[in-house]
Image (cartoon, rainbow, N blue to C red; front, top):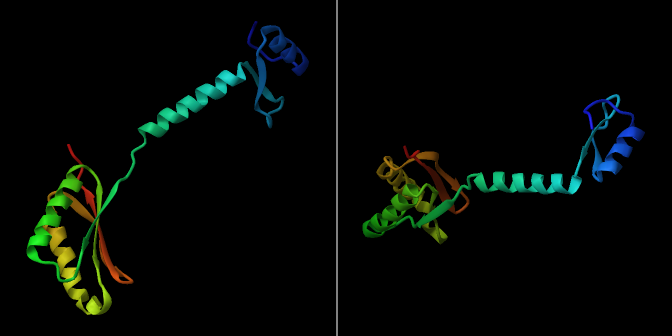
Length: 148
């Protein structure tokens, strides 16, 4: 079989002789572009290709660390160690201070706590979003530094 331009009837005849499918590639072109191929095999290989691309895509993991506005120093150090480990593994960190009841009056304490955490984790990650109050939560995001 020779590659070339054939009328539809001739192309269908060739496809039947070879026991394969005639697939329309570009219907809007004049004349429409068709290709002789095994369609089931083509679909299978396309799905296989998509699966490989999907597996290579990087997945963003977000780990959370929760503080209270009056978090003790020992608890802070303990949670900071976990944050270092998370950033070292390449996960993003979402640190937040949760204000219960009337503790919302300590907004400044919560912000100071998050900024202190950002300063302590400076060598492990970079602040992606500064502390921001959303309802009863003050949230801050830290992205890991690129590992060389």
